[in-house]
Amino acid sequence: MNGKHPHGIITFTAAAACVKGQIVKFTGSTDANGAPTVTPTTAATDLAIGVTETECAAGDQVAVGILGSYAGTTLVSAGGAVAVGANVSPIGTSADSGLTIGVALNAAAQSGDLIELAHRLPVSL
Figure: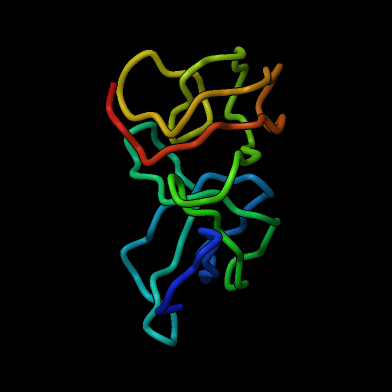
Protein backbone atom coordinates (compact mmCIF):
# COMPACT_ATOMS: atom_id res chain seq x y z
CA MET A 1 0.00 0.00 0.00
CA ASN A 2 2.84 2.44 0.72
CA GLY A 3 3.91 4.42 -2.29
CA LYS A 4 2.43 6.65 -4.95
CA HIS A 5 -1.03 6.05 -6.37
CA PRO A 6 -1.26 8.38 -9.40
CA HIS A 7 -4.90 7.53 -10.13
CA GLY A 8 -6.07 7.95 -6.53
CA ILE A 9 -7.12 4.31 -6.11
CA ILE A 10 -5.75 2.32 -3.16
CA THR A 11 -6.59 -1.24 -2.09
CA PHE A 12 -7.60 -1.80 1.54
CA THR A 13 -8.96 -4.72 3.55
CA ALA A 14 -12.70 -4.34 4.14
CA ALA A 15 -13.74 -4.80 7.78
CA ALA A 16 -17.39 -5.22 6.67
CA ALA A 17 -19.25 -6.05 3.49
CA CYS A 18 -19.54 -3.22 0.95
CA VAL A 19 -21.60 -2.60 -2.17
CA LYS A 20 -20.17 -0.93 -5.28
CA GLY A 21 -20.08 2.81 -4.70
CA GLN A 22 -20.13 2.46 -0.90
CA ILE A 23 -18.68 5.45 0.93
CA VAL A 24 -16.09 4.18 3.41
CA LYS A 25 -14.01 5.38 6.35
CA PHE A 26 -11.01 4.03 8.24
CA THR A 27 -11.90 1.68 11.11
CA GLY A 28 -9.01 2.64 13.36
CA SER A 29 -7.74 -0.96 13.11
CA THR A 30 -5.22 -2.59 10.80
CA ASP A 31 -5.07 -5.82 8.80
CA ALA A 32 -2.47 -8.59 9.21
CA ASN A 33 0.03 -6.51 7.21
CA GLY A 34 -0.41 -3.44 9.38
CA ALA A 35 -2.40 -1.51 6.74
CA PRO A 36 -5.54 0.41 7.76
CA THR A 37 -8.89 -1.28 7.21
CA VAL A 38 -12.07 0.37 5.91
CA THR A 39 -15.76 0.03 6.68
CA PRO A 40 -18.92 1.69 5.33
CA THR A 41 -19.82 5.07 6.80
CA THR A 42 -22.86 4.98 9.07
CA ALA A 43 -23.25 8.59 10.22
CA ALA A 44 -23.29 11.95 8.46
CA THR A 45 -20.45 12.98 10.81
CA ASP A 46 -18.13 10.13 9.71
CA LEU A 47 -14.89 11.27 8.07
CA ALA A 48 -15.15 9.48 4.72
CA ILE A 49 -11.90 8.49 3.01
CA GLY A 50 -13.22 7.19 -0.32
CA VAL A 51 -15.63 5.14 -2.42
CA THR A 52 -15.44 1.41 -3.19
CA GLU A 53 -14.93 0.36 -6.81
CA THR A 54 -16.65 -3.04 -6.37
CA GLU A 55 -18.72 -4.94 -3.86
CA CYS A 56 -16.86 -6.98 -1.27
CA ALA A 57 -17.28 -9.21 1.76
CA ALA A 58 -15.69 -8.60 5.13
CA GLY A 59 -12.01 -9.53 4.91
CA ASP A 60 -11.79 -8.99 1.14
CA GLN A 61 -9.38 -6.61 -0.52
CA VAL A 62 -11.31 -3.71 -2.07
CA ALA A 63 -10.16 -0.90 -4.36
CA VAL A 64 -11.10 2.51 -2.95
CA GLY A 65 -11.13 5.76 -4.93
CA ILE A 66 -9.74 8.37 -2.54
CA LEU A 67 -11.98 11.45 -2.27
CA GLY A 68 -10.32 14.53 -3.70
CA SER A 69 -7.51 12.47 -5.28
CA TYR A 70 -9.48 10.09 -7.47
CA ALA A 71 -9.36 11.05 -11.16
CA GLY A 72 -12.68 12.28 -12.55
CA THR A 73 -16.10 11.72 -11.05
CA THR A 74 -17.21 8.62 -9.14
CA LEU A 75 -20.38 6.58 -8.63
CA VAL A 76 -21.81 6.60 -5.12
CA SER A 77 -24.56 4.45 -3.64
CA ALA A 78 -27.17 6.96 -2.45
CA GLY A 79 -28.42 6.79 1.13
CA GLY A 80 -31.83 8.15 0.07
CA ALA A 81 -33.40 10.47 -2.47
CA VAL A 82 -30.86 13.03 -3.74
CA ALA A 83 -31.54 15.92 -6.13
CA VAL A 84 -29.25 17.02 -8.94
CA GLY A 85 -26.83 19.64 -7.60
CA ALA A 86 -27.28 18.65 -3.97
CA ASN A 87 -24.31 18.51 -1.65
CA VAL A 88 -23.84 14.89 -0.61
CA SER A 89 -23.06 13.76 2.94
CA PRO A 90 -20.72 10.91 3.98
CA ILE A 91 -23.75 8.57 4.06
CA GLY A 92 -24.89 9.44 0.55
CA THR A 93 -27.78 11.73 1.47
CA SER A 94 -28.46 15.38 0.59
CA ALA A 95 -26.84 17.80 3.02
CA ASP A 96 -27.44 21.52 3.57
CA SER A 97 -24.96 21.62 6.46
CA GLY A 98 -22.35 19.44 8.13
CA LEU A 99 -19.80 17.31 6.30
CA THR A 100 -20.12 16.91 2.54
CA ILE A 101 -18.04 14.93 0.06
CA GLY A 102 -19.20 16.39 -3.25
CA VAL A 103 -22.07 17.42 -5.51
CA ALA A 104 -24.60 15.07 -7.15
CA LEU A 105 -24.50 15.24 -10.95
CA ASN A 106 -27.69 13.21 -11.33
CA ALA A 107 -30.64 12.39 -9.09
CA ALA A 108 -31.33 9.34 -6.94
CA ALA A 109 -34.92 8.33 -6.34
CA GLN A 110 -34.14 6.04 -3.42
CA SER A 111 -31.47 4.47 -1.25
CA GLY A 112 -29.13 2.24 -3.24
CA ASP A 113 -29.42 4.15 -6.53
CA LEU A 114 -26.00 4.98 -7.97
CA ILE A 115 -25.38 8.69 -8.45
CA GLU A 116 -22.49 10.36 -10.23
CA LEU A 117 -20.57 12.51 -7.78
CA ALA A 118 -18.18 15.39 -8.40
CA HIS A 119 -16.19 14.48 -5.28
CA ARG A 120 -13.87 16.37 -2.96
CA LEU A 121 -12.22 15.90 0.39
CA PRO A 122 -14.82 16.07 3.16
CA VAL A 123 -15.63 19.68 4.05
CA SER A 124 -18.07 21.18 6.53
CA LEU A 125 -20.74 23.55 5.23
